[in-house]
Length: 118
Image (cartoon, rainbow, N blue to C red; front, side, top):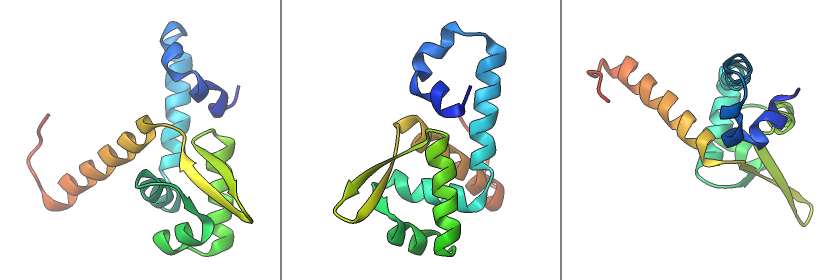
């Protein structure tokens, strides 16, 4: 089953086996393990944006950004809507925004040698 199908009912997944939940979580984290996709999701955490805006925000070439957005869309992590001739992207849910924020906070601690905390 695709990652997107699992994410659609994320809160209901607690009734499914831990193995399946871990597999889906690993697939989400694997998508986040790419710098460009992480930058795209970070920008989308601030609000919806079109490809031009996302290209500027992450500093990658437009074809690369489009390919990464397609992967994120197929995985069910981002949603799209039409605004005239533009396609506007957004995060599908706040869990993903918080996950990206937490990953970046861990990076801040690693880079700045900050003490751990809860």
